[in-house]
Length: 172
Image 1 (tube, rainbow, N blue to C red):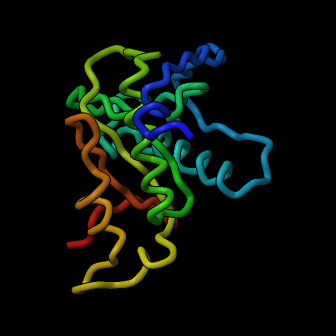
Image 2: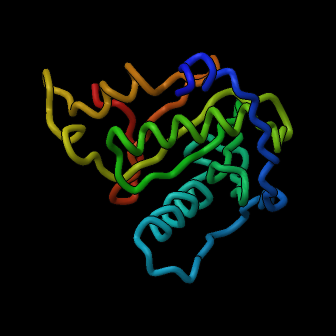
């Protein structure tokens, strides 16, 4: 029987898995996918809202990503560049996924963008499971996100709820 030390001292060499070339599409008008899947249509709704309300939201540009782990980016009127991830539902599992996606996006450096990255934004429609329960007057999901998932590699990742054609942050 091998010892634990013997097992963990083994070298490993895994070849890199090939991936498709990244694509960045600057959005100037609404997008429409052919999917009937709710997560995909929700993602379209979020990007369409950002594009259609650029001026009032203080957004300079909106781009959508393919093959970059995250869904896109926005450049704010003050020139901060924020990468974007869209999750239909938000709970512990989805928060962990989003945090991992941001971390890998930064680590892999497959797209540097037009300026330095300032942070990120996760848009979601609703909290689920225990994240939907109120605690101390606030829905637990807001507290969990900002306590445990909102900082990635020194950058702040904000959580915004897009629902009923409007966006809100942490309720006061």
